[in-house]
Image (cartoon, rainbow over all chains, first blue to last red; front, side, top):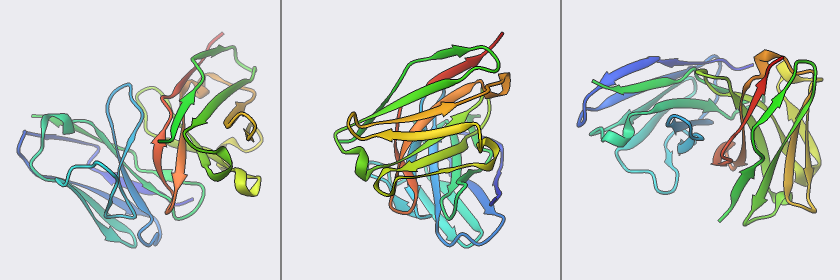
Length: 107
Length: 118
């Protein structure tokens, strides 16, 4: 199975900050990397697919980069609604696997 | 647009089975790959398996192999996940999700809570 290592596991930031969340795959996955946002009690929401492509309706302050084994989710100018959990997900091969998650909290 | 609606919360005793449903509306199940993902309390996301109705195939994570069966009923546009011999470690919210293109999950059901308790 492909292991996804996501960091940090938690992050404190303020409204208006810029934050980066990284995800490392245990083997080359090309650009088969997706990012999700999850708020408590809700299903995850797709933010970005294929490492850097926007899902419909996602604000442009979210961006993704990387290929191969190293990927980054960047959130520019944090808004109050951005404080949530974030997960990376590799869809290169089954079993699909997720990173452990990053909890983004208000400082 | 496509929506996924899941069955409600379930309570089971250890060793029993549960079958969770996921109804696809606004589209046809035949053309929809449906994955199941679970999330234990306070934990992250774990892929359980998926059904590809177009090819009549299912794939499962090794961890659940032999205990889980994912099926599709195209007459009712509903996918099912059956989990057998449940233990307290299976207590989790189970989500169904539509898998598209590069394998991303773009639409999710609301989740079904399974509680396993004696």
